[in-house]
Image 1 (cartoon, rainbow, N blue to C red):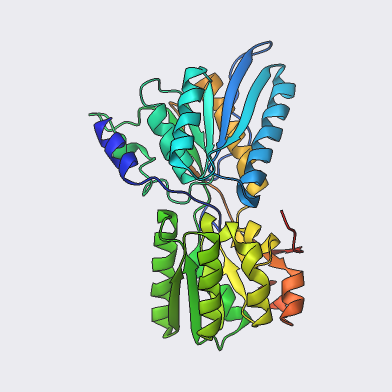
Image 2: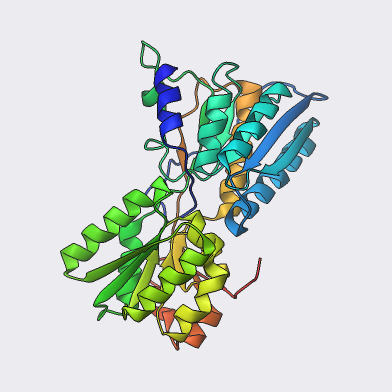
Length: 347
């Protein structure tokens, strides 16, 4: 307990999506127990903040909970709230959920998961998180808060959308084998960006490709950072599953496209807001899986559950508006995965 508290207090930050390198091969169906007919359950769904990816996940969780309730003749009451990327608000929301005696908390993104885990430390209320890129680094796995026998205390699990950075770098070079300088655009406030940025640097170093870093923590800083990368003459920009950059994508995509600089990202929400391409998980599937896990945790307990469930990737999302603006032929991705075409949306 003490180790968990220290670990969580020291590193409260968030997460998004990307191309999983492997799958846990687990079923998407809830492992439902005995006859639950007629029972009522309460669930708190807590988003880290409001933006396209986390909204998609929350909506998918809610839809799946509704389906589970109908299929099993039970009532599942839930509220969807947002912490507005504020740790104080997130703590208030998770503490209130515990006070309301919910049967499970479903936090969406890393900081929300960390704070919910801390709130549920005494009650052991099931915490089933969604879209945590690196559960181990976030101290959300059993090894970091194990009891003396090394076993998970049994109230925390969830879904991970870990990013396959090398694959996205491969996409970048498949599109343009002559890339000579890459911009790395991310926020220092998000530890989930730390590993993919390190992986990107290692990949580019191995290829002898120059890179330029720009970091930002507010929308205005993101706009300034993107402008700096354009001025530096980068051939492409990479951003991992970074919520700060995602929240500002609509403010930078047009400038990058006009400069002929494709933006490769860690989640399809970026691409729907104007970035060029990504390879990642399906967030609707991730949300449904998370809801299934939560129902299993409520009805069957968590003794047989894994520390977390890695969602499989392989979905390449391309913004056709952006591709057309830069006259890019993305047929080079056809042999790399399932290509999904989207257009720019403002939500």
